[in-house]
Image (cartoon, rainbow, N blue to C red; front, side, top):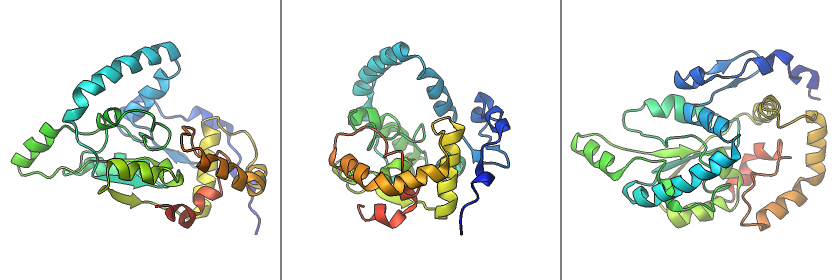
Length: 247
């Protein structure tokens, strides 16, 4: 049975229905008949700041010094949420786990430390999590403290498990999956919405079937790669068992 590509064409009005800063502050999920999405406040601000390259570079240098001084007083995560994109990791972390009294998730979602930002220091990574003092005070008050993060891309990167085990050998892993057809379509819709995809899904799938293995092998062999998973992976991202084998 073929896919009705006309049913997933992008309505023009979708580009006028973007989440706002206020949506992020009040944790409102932007919903419409075509697709749903959510951005937290730090992510929203970060996306706007990243447009100013010079300012970002200066801030990164200052922040690097700040991390080296304070990071030793921060803890590493107890759990990681893994899933290919469009499987609900953001909603799980931001809208559910953050409301749990025993869980203090990372300051931002999608840190991407063990795939795209693995060239940064561990100190940079630790700054996203609570301090040792926070955990001690909560312990005195009789409260548990679990912390973690959700980065979907980790499960797709065969080099990520090695990096994670080296730093956090006992960290717990939570894997989220979704109906593979729904995930594939949602993945495509999201990339179109954020203007990173302009081709028809039918053409992209055909290209992926012909070229993915070759491009993926090149990606796996480049252990120092900081780029995200090969972009032509709408179908491959939904082949969950293939990725879980690495883990």
